[in-house]
Structures are given as structure tokens and as C-alpha cells.
Image (cartoon, rainbow, N blue to C red; front, top):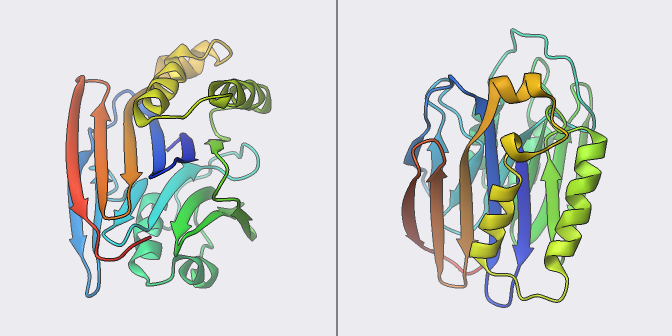
Length: 237
């Protein structure tokens, strides 16, 4: 939930997400499903709060959570509800954007969502007071980092590396995965040691959306295991 990339290749849309968490956090459960009237949701489930940071439905719509909005905030619990539960509530709606606009976020800690819905790519943010929404160019690549762990200096260096990574190449999913492994929190030289003592990148989740199918993979970095789920799409994206 702390580093997310988006790529559109010749035949795929690829989302990849690093989850940075406290070392003593319980492991997530993958795959987890939730059946709705018109769709089936797939996601890794956080055992502590029962929410998630990454959801895909069988129509090819996806939403990914990052902690914090535009800048680092001071956490002031208790909060009304987990942000991972808020994410699930939003994607249960048939229209993610409408659900975000109508959701009562008072008492919810700041967050942002990278959303792919109805062929549109959006960045939705809650700064603790005001909601913000931006449409992104779905034909360009994007990299987002959580403001709670990565300051502007680190984020700027990541963006430079992200641009170098793309230059003159046809990007494949495995290369993107390696890029994310390179940017695990414990490998970032500018991260404070006090943060590294408490947090690690526990997993990398990757989603590959093709015309007729979806591949969802969960890489548990603490146990060095990979779990895969293949989803048949109900409709084309």
C-alpha cells in the first residue's frame, strides 16, 4: 500500500504494489473473494483490520490504496474505520468514483486511491478534510508513493529512476516486478534507520489485465512464496 505503478503495454494493463508494513503485522490472506450480485471481487485480506489495499473485480476494474494524501500527516487514532474497509466499501458500488464522492470520510485517516474503472484511470484523495479527484492519462505510466513513509526527496529520486527504467524499452511484467523489488523500503538509502527498524516491504502484489483474462499474483517477501489467481473476465476492458 506504499508504492504503486501503472503501465499500459501493447496487450496488457499492469498494476504493481509494494506493501510496507510493521514487522510484527499479521500476514495477509490471499486470495480472498467477495461475491456481489453482479461481480466477484478478488483481494489480499489484511487479517488485523479485515480490509485490503488492492482489489480487482472480474470485469477488470481495480482500486489500490496508499496511506496519506498530498503530504505526511500526524496519525491521531482512534479513527472511525480502517482505510482498507473504506476501500472495500467503495468498490462494492457499481461506480467507484460516485461511491468515493458520496462516502462520508469524516473520522477517516488520510489516504489516496489509484483507480482503474470503466477504462478510465483516476487518482482519488482524502486529505482529512477535503476530497480530491484527478483523471490520469491511461496511455502513460505512473508511479505513486505513500507520503507517510517517503518524503519529497525520496519520491523525486524514485520518479527519476522510474523514467530511466522506461526509456527505449518494451516493458514486461517481470521487469516491473524487479523494479519494485529494487525499491523495497529496506533498500532505500535515504529512509531513516528508525523507520527501517520498524517497517519492511512484506509483499508485492501484481495485477495483469488482458482482453479476456486477468492474472493476479501475490509475492510474500517474508516467506519467499508466490500465489497466483487467474480470473476469467466477464466483459472486456
